[in-house]
Amino acid sequence: MLSRLGALLQQVVETREPSVDLLEAFTEHWKGITGYYLEATDESVPARQTDIPWRLKQMLDILVYEEKQHPAGEAGPCLEYLLQHKVLETLSTLGKAEYPPGMRQQVLLFFSRVLGQVQHPLLHYLNVHRPVQKLLQLSGDRLGSGVEKEEAQFVAVLCTKIKQDPTLLAYILEGKSILNGRRAQELPASPVEEGAEHPSGTAAAASPRQAEPSPPRRDSNLITSLMGLCKSKKSRVALKARENLLLLVGLAQEAAAACLVRSSTLCQLLTEHLCDLYSAVPTSTDPADVLALERVSWRSQGDAAGDGVFPGKENLAAFFGWLDYLDELVMGAHPVVADAITEAVEEKFFQGILQPQLLQMSELDVLSATAVLTGTVRQIRSPPLLRCLVLFLLGSDRHPETPGDTPHPLRTQLIDRCNHLSDEISLASLRLFEELLRKPHEHVAHSLALRNLQARGYLQRSPPVPDERGPPRAGPRRGWAGPGGGSVFHRWLPRCRLWIGKKASAGISPVGEGASERGGQQLPLPGPRGGEDVLVHGGRWLRHLRARCPGHGERLRGRGGSPSPVVVTPCSGSHPPSPPLPGPGVPCRRGPVGVAPGPPTPRCLLPRNGFLRGPFPQGSV
Image (cartoon, rainbow, N blue to C red):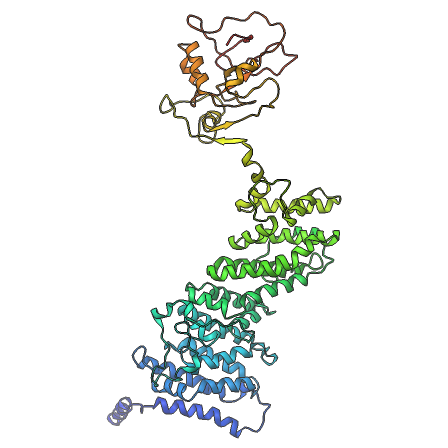
C-alpha cells in the first residue's frame, strides 16, 4: 500500500506542465476583447465589471514574460502581433468612444504599463506613437475629466522615456524625425518591415536646422496635456504634472530643446495662464495685504491660502505660486527654452499688463499694481527672468544722465513717485526700490546711482604702495583693528585717493603744486584717527618730513606704509609761543596733529594721540 502511494506521488512530481503557446494565448485574449463588442447588449455596464480589464492584464503579463525569454533588443512574436495588427491603435479608438463606460481609463492604464514595463523601444514605431498622440488629444475632452489620475500616470511615463531618449520628443509632438525631417507617417509601421525603426542613438544629435520648420500647433499634445493637468484642482495631480514638465524642459540636447520651443505652444500657454491668474486677483485687494504676503512656493499649492486672512488671498497666492513655478522652470530649463519663456513673459505680462497699469493716472490702480510688482520682484530668483525684470523697470542705459537724454519712462515715473503727494504711493514705491536693491544684479545699483557718479572723480583707484619696512612686526598694534587685524586706516589708505575739488571748504586745500600759492601747509597725519576730515596720498611729503626730523623716521613711516598729507591753512590771530620745530638736536615729543576746526579754538592744531604735539604757526613747515 505504501509502495503504491509512493509511486503515485513520484508520478505526480515527474509530471510536467504542458507548454503554453504564448502567441496563441495572446491572440485569444485579444479576440475576447473584440468579441465583447459583438456580443454585448447592455451598453450601460461599466468596463470594470467586464472581463476587459482582466484580459488586458493577461496580455501585458505575456508581453513582459516573452521579453524576458528573448535576447535584449529582439522583438518576440507577441510584440510583433501587437504592432502588425494595430492593437494599440484599436484600443485608442475604443478609449475615444468611451464604450463601455470607463474604457478610456482602462486604455490609459494599459498604455502606461506597456510603455513602462516593456524595455524594448516602442515609441519609435508609427503604430505606437500615433495612438499615443490620439490619447493625448483626448485630454481636453470633457468626457475624460474623471481620469486625471490615469492621464498623469500616462504622461509621466512618456516624460520619463523622453528624458532617457530626447529624440522621442519629436515623434510625440509632431510625428517628425529630428534627424532627417521626414514625416513619421512615411516610415514603416512594424519592425518586421524594412527600416521599421527610426534611427536613434548618437545619430539623433543632428542639428535642428535639418528639420523642416513648422509653426506651433494648438492641437492637443503632450504639452497641452501637461498644462491641463497643471491646472487640476487635485493638488497631487497638479504637482506631478509640474514635476514632469520640469523634467521635459530640462532636456540637455539642443535639438530637443529647439523642437520643444518651435513645435509646441509651451511659452504661450505658460504666459497666458500667468496673465489669467493675475486677472483673477480682485481689484479690491488691499495693497498692504499684498505687501505683507510671504513668499509663495509652487510646491505648497493651496497651503498659502488656507488661512483666508483677507479676501482675494487664494487668487493672489495662486498667481505668485505660478510665478514661482515659472521662475523654477527658467532656472532649470535648457538655455534655449529659458530664453523663450523669458521673452514671452516680458512681452505678455510685463509690457502687456503691468506697464499700462503702472503708467496710468488712477492712484488706486497705481498703488495696487506697485504692490503686485513688489511681490513679483520678491518672487523672481532666476538670472534670465531677473535680468528681464530689471531692464523692464530701469532700462538698459548705462551712461551718465544728461538733461538732453530721453529718460526711460517707467524708471522716471517710479522714481518720481517716491516723492508723491500720496504717502501710500510713496511708501509703496520705496518698498519696490528696497526689494530691487536686495536683488543680486549689478545693473540695479549702476542704473540708480553709479552711472551718475563714476565720471565725477570721487574715487580713483591707484596701485598699492609697497611697504618699505617689509613684513609687519608681530605683536599688538595701536588704533582701530579691523577684522583681518591691524589698522583699517593704514590698510585702506595706500590703495585709495580721495580728491577734493577746488571749491572745498575753507581751511583745506587739495594736494598739488598750487597749494603753496594759497598759503597752506601740508602735514602728515599718520595714525588710525588722523583721517577724520580729509585723506590724500603724499609720499613726497613724508620724505620731506623725514628729512626735517632725522631719527624719527620709524614713527613718521607709520604702521601701514606711507602716511597721507593734508593741507592745513594757518589760523589768524595771536598764538602762544611755540616750541621749535623738531629737527637735528631737537627731541620730538609724541602727540598727534589735527586740523583746527576754527574759532573759538585758539590753536590751529588740536593735540591728539599721535607723534607730534604743539601748535604750528604760519611758516613753521
